[in-house]
Amino acid sequence: MQQDGNTKVSALFETAVAAAVRAPSVHNTQPWRWRLDGETIRLFADRDRQLPATDPSQRALLLSCGAALHHLRMALAEAGLTASVTYFPDLADPDHLADITATTAAPSPEDLDMAAAIPDRRSDRRRFGPRPVPARQLRAVARAALPYSAAARLVPPNLRDLLAEVGHLAADRHRADPGYQRELSAWSGRHGTADGVPAANTPPVRGGDLAMRFFAEPELADRPLPDDTAEWFALCTPADDRLARVKAGEAASAVLLTATGLGLATCLQTEPLELPELRDEVRSEVLFDCAFAHALVRVGSVPAEAEPLPATPRRAPAEVIESDTAIGHVREAASSVRI
Figure (spheres, one colour):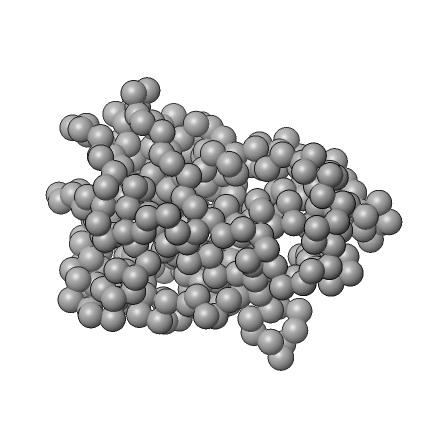
C-alpha cells in the first residue's frame, strides 16, 4: 500500500467508522466491531448483538455487517482512497469478517454520490407517494448491486400478491412466537437510546397491502395516501454461504444509497425471509430457483409535503472500536472529511 494511503487510513479511521455505523442493521442492533491494526482496518461481527429468535442463522447479522463495510468503503472513497477487502481472513475466527486496506485513487462519481447520501438515508416505513418511480431510476438502483456479486431483481406486478402473502404469513407466525416477541419488544419502541428502533421512526401496522414488520409503541404518523406506488427489489446472490451474505449486505448498502441519492425513499425488509420455508418460496416463485434472496428493498417517491424523518440514533465510534490506535490523534485531518 502506498505510503500516502497509509497515512490517510490512520488519520481517517474514526471518521470512516462514524460513516460505517450509519448503515442499516436488523432492529438497529449495530452488530459490528472495528479495529485498526497498523494500516489495516478489521471488521468483526459482534455476536453478543445477534438476535437468536429473529435471526438464528446470522443471515441478518452478516447482512448488517456487510452494509457497514460498504458504508466504510464509500467514506474512504470520498477521502481519495480505494479499499481492497479480504473476506474472512482468519479461518480460526469466524467473527473476523474482513480486512480492509487502502491505496490512493480518484473515486468514481458513483462512489462520491453514495458517500454523499450516507447522512440522508433513512428507513422509511410509511406509505410512499403516488408518483411512480421512473424506469431509468429503477435501472440505476438495480445496477448498484452488481459490483458485489449480487443482483437486485425488480419484483414484477404479477408477483406482488405472492410477496404480500409471504409477508403476512411471516407476520402471523412471528406474532405467535413468544421468543420473537420478546426480542422485538426489547429492541423497539425506544426513546433516547443509541441503538434499537425508535418509536418516532415507526408507523402503526396497516392491513391489506404488503405486510410491514410490527414494532412496539409506534409513534410515526403515516401518510394518508390512497395508493402506494412502491417498487420492490429482491436482493439476491448465486450462493448462500457466509461470504454471499456479507456481499449481499454490501449490495444492499449500494442499492439504498443509490436510491437515496436519486431522491427516493427506501426501506430494507428481511422479515419474510427469516423463516426458511418462506424464504424457499420466494426463491422458487419470485427468483425461479436461480438465486438466494437475502432482503427485500422497498423503493418509492416521497410526496412533496412529507415530513422529514428523524435520523435513527447510532452508537458513537468509540463504542464499536476495539483498538485505541490512531483514535484521538490527527482529529483535525479526520474532521475535514464530510460524511
